[in-house]
Length: 295
Length: 303
Image: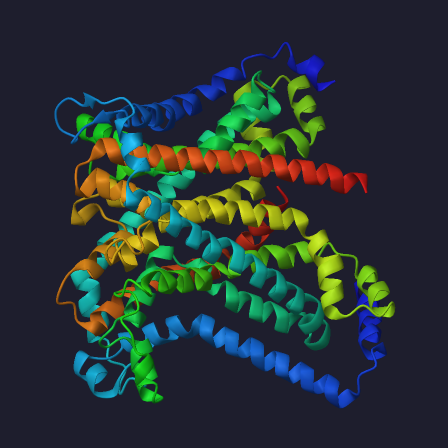
């Protein structure tokens, strides 16, 4: 079926009254134009990578465009140590994983009550969640900052975890509720209830296994959003030992007398996890982006 | 059937308790507190002094307040309007020209490449660009020097006349991948026969783009425009990492202005006012937008 439509499509192009030469020329030209655009899009990453393997002297002697004379990793290792990058990575991982798991659990509970239990006031809750999704963090920042100072949670990873998990739960509940109330197979619920399942069993033995793929997409979303978040860590995490990767890098850039190759090495270290996640999560993410748009 | 069966099985409500508690503590109460603080003068220490609407009056006459929102408008151009237009054009081009002529793999390859900036934290992207745009030894000025365009070298982020445009350029670069990926996914729905029929009728590529692609991608365009507009209004990280709102107030935006009042100049009441106004604006825009969308969808379904 797909093949058929493809060949028909090709005929359409040969049907247009262009000579083969003109046709080939426009083809090559458009490929060249796209390639130029691609180079522009990737240029920043290429140049950051290139200069993370140079020493300061080499940079000033040959400029940013030259290939590194040798694969000099001293700049990178020094920057890693200066940033205490291992600690920052660990903090980011702990915060992102905790937020994702907590937000998924909360979203699941909420959506179970709203989407499957059809608890009253569903419309109100959904509008509320929609508003919570659009809320800028600035409008919560100061009271939360004040609260955390009062109860001794200021400058702990827990402060970021609790706040971000709640914010992401708004989106998670919204998405899961719409999944549960529309496409979830109702026969399964009926069968489980006839079997005498209680609510907890229904949730964990029926609903969770069936929605595993949606939950996986949610996990990836929450993980990446949390990893990328900057504003709340900036406000809540003041000490070096609690900071996340983006925060540490942004603060490092603010310091004076930073060597130019150290700066590029720091940016390079910041880019790396993104690339790793992209490779790891590519499939789930592609599914999720499409799912999100149809929602 | 389900309702009859589930009505005796009450007890779903208890599952809402943890969620509701968290929402109350971390969203509802802080939000209300922020609105309350916006009616006070407060340095963050001691008791806030009630000033009623004084902060809002002050905002109306404050040049920085207006400059911030003007720059948020620039960001909407850079993060919503341009990426949506470029994304639409690129998606259609990759989908019905490149993919047809050179195969799906080539099209997917370009899509992945253009999406690449989206996979890293926007703050890191901003740091990368700040490095490239550095006035003395930055890569861009160095390149301009190298190709004999020294006259064009510039302190891009440090000069008030170019700073906002430099930030906009970075944001366009960062955003393009998002609409592109969403639109290309949406295009999978389009019936190839429509394109064939149009081509046989002698429609040009642009004709098909305008009369078929854009109307069919409407739902995706709505989602992209709304989400990116909200992002543009909330932008904080890139400004923090690239310019801190400077030079002067050349790149000041609402969220950074609010942050500055909260945490840099201890003007908590005024910061809360800024945050409240920003929130109100976002909510109003979202509601108007959703209503317009609904109305247009109804019209669309009548045709």
